[in-house]
Length: 151
Image (cartoon, rainbow, N blue to C red):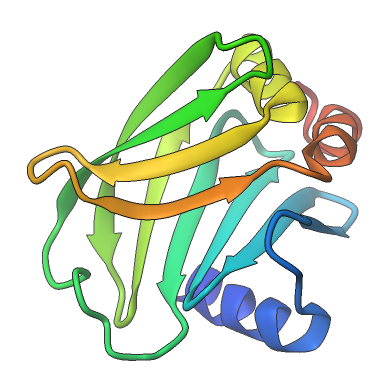
């Protein structure tokens, strides 16, 4: 998982992103969608060898690591333009100034992701929002995930 945090931070520095505009990084066997919102970076990655799950990383770019001190139950809320909402729960494991977690995934989950209007990740215990962003660019990520990761 440390590799995920390092690659996310490097992606943030190399590609950058305006809030609401996800960037896409493809390799032969994986796809990563990245977004930067304020002092947070979020990365969602699929791997061809693990077609039933995705890895999500949320980094604190200010490097303070505030709120990333302990394993935390998190909830990702994905909202479509028509108001329908899907939620994914996962455990955020701290890795320095970042959380990383693995979420089970289905084609339906990823279709929501690809057509969504917004994404919000919250700490389930406190209700605090860790990151909230728009979803511009996730349709391309969904297509790439289907091609490269098989779902």
